[in-house]
Amino acid sequence: IRRQRQMCIRDRSKIVVFDSRLHQLYSIDIDTNKKISDVVVTGKSLVVGFIEGGCKIYDLSTMNCSTLKEVTEQTSVVTLYLGSQDIWWIGTDGQGIMQLLPYQSLFHRVVTENPVRCFCEDGKGNIIVGTKGSGIKLFDVQKKLLLNFLDESNGLPSMSVYALKKNQYGDIFIGTEGKGIGAVSYTHLRAHE
Image (cartoon, rainbow, N blue to C red; front, side):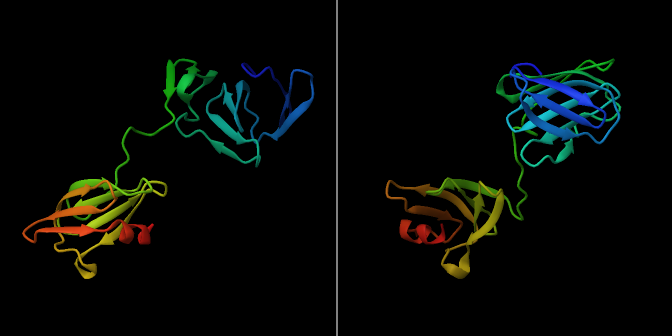
């Protein structure tokens, strides 16, 4: 195991990881008889590449195992390397170099019922979303959920919102279609946090 001065030994159905003083750190049950090509310990995970194909990730705190789905069972793994910015580089036998980024895409898509017209941020870093037809939504950034926030039933002048602007006090002004400008006070926003 490179970079962390650790040694790995496979014993029939286990991988045993030792530190540089030969103290046992982990003993992981391996659920395959495939030949191991490379092992990398990173943070709380042990990543194992197999010459017959595929990669498995073992969570060192729970000892649970999952398959690295981006590397198919048909991909013969020769070497693993965790580079800067948590980018995985995987050398294969006959399929070149694979690069696995720590994210699926630069973008996270959230589907809405109506077109989105404007954005504003609340005091907790969530995104307030103005829509054409379904009022104002709140996108919870941590949970990646789009929630109903304001509509005509709780005082929004129109369900079509074209502008949101927050002032220095945290109040949000709302530009609507045909119904003028509305405002939501900072105190009201805090009640929803």
